[in-house]
Length: 317
Image 1 (tube, helix red, strand yellow):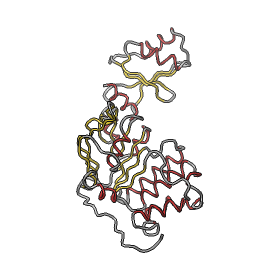
Image 2: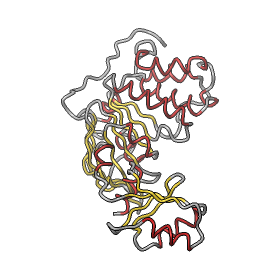
Image 3: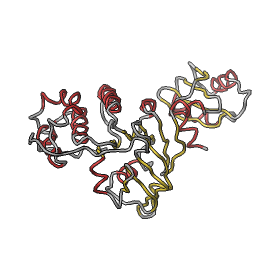
Image 4: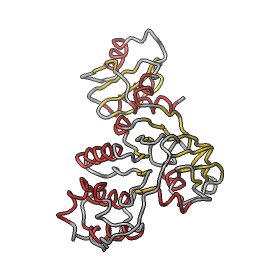
């Protein structure tokens, strides 16, 4: 399929936002998946949509990728309406769904050749876009896609989404279920793509990946709670944050929540994090009360917030 052709990558106006979403609503029966979502993504950004499963991320991505219709609202990509101009939008986007959706009985090379042909281009023509990624796949180019590891499936799906040189790349939870090394490699690839003037919109349930984005939106139950840079969101955390640990972590969570000064308490890795209602909160008094309830090896200290803490704080308010 590596024949010469007249394929031309879509031209874009770099002065205008890459994606505009205005007041988008989406329901499935009585379930409201999206409730008035609005945002803009600047050209060349890595924009992250951060939230747990069921928050509405996939519905939003499928609307932006012209796969489903919103009940209300407007969405444009490169100024083209995703409903009226869906054919133009599809030429301009690359889409990588959360679930691996390539042809599992076809080889790596066959999948990539097929998607090249769909867009009227060739692997050779846009190899500069996928070269760094494809070189890792090349030893397995004759292997069926269904027999690849999770990390290699991820790389193949990204190659297929990039082969026509899209101006905007939609990645719906691309690192879910992938090992930590592959996750790190994937984000390094996104940073390199950004340097090639590709706008990236990526969703993830992993709060630590938020810091790798230029801006993020924190989504809960179909609504954006805030949109800003990770730095600004963390700096806006307006209450002291504490962590606690003891030899009875399951019981500790309930005991902390019963303590009158504790406002919000939740599990975070090997510690429990909590905020307090009183400015004169005394950790020594809390430690004494926990000891009286049978806890030992108690550790309580004030800490700096992370994106996860900001999410939990906003979700409670």
